[in-house]
Image (cartoon, rainbow, N blue to C red; front, side, top):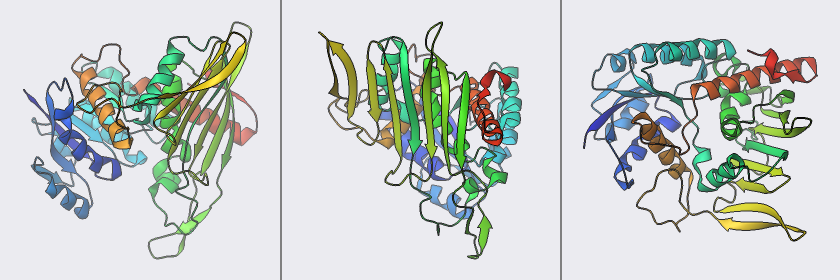
Length: 380
């Protein structure tokens, strides 16, 4: 079985998760070629030291160009702050590497447009965008129900990702709370792909939207303890319209919140139509709820989800599923689609979907500034 050399640029939280993810590859029932983490780039020596425990890593460096020049590296996972996306993504694509790119695909819409042009200019490059939560089995079943038309004419959609990570006002500042590094979208750039991946894949691209954006905590402690401006939005709620029929629209509410008291990292998807409905949340990861009307009686029925996601593994179907399993399934889908074996199974977020999220964020910023609904068609 052949190996695929993988390089990592950015060894933070999700970068570190790559190592144990690839170590699980033999558990796939049809593993195909085996991805192996061979090189890591980060500007923090302590991060590079962490990867010394990964036996397969042969190169650690603070210069990402070493990975671009290494012919043994075929795939790059680029997990760096948003302001670095444009230059590194484009350099990697032009170097002929396949790329798993972190969302939001650039600092803003202009950067995303330039990156997308680079992707289209290299049709031989395989580029996808990180978004793992829709790979939960319950999420997969909910998405498939919508794709298969089980809902009928859509009446109401509510999606989002919420956590309470910024509830503590004394939490030190980091790059995600600074516009220069995270981008003007703030929380939308951070969490938006998680909320929008599933709707976009189903085909639910908003026609219009009205945004309520909140910057509740305007300062946070800096490295020396002194206050530093926290100039990104903490929370965002979008009310969008979707085409439901030739003569009617349906509302879609999208929540992206860093300050949502009581939540840890909760993803929600709820869609109801004239013929049925589905509801799933990672707060109750083993349960999918379906709505139906039978013989004039309406009700919700709970269904266990197990571990059956996109790629079968050696784990029994009855075992519970978790976040690291979703990350594993995302990477399995990435490599299966890369080698042409994914078929019609659910795949990773595409560059076009990432660009669509940036259009939505830009429309939301315009709506917030003007206090009015914005037509998405006006944002190109």
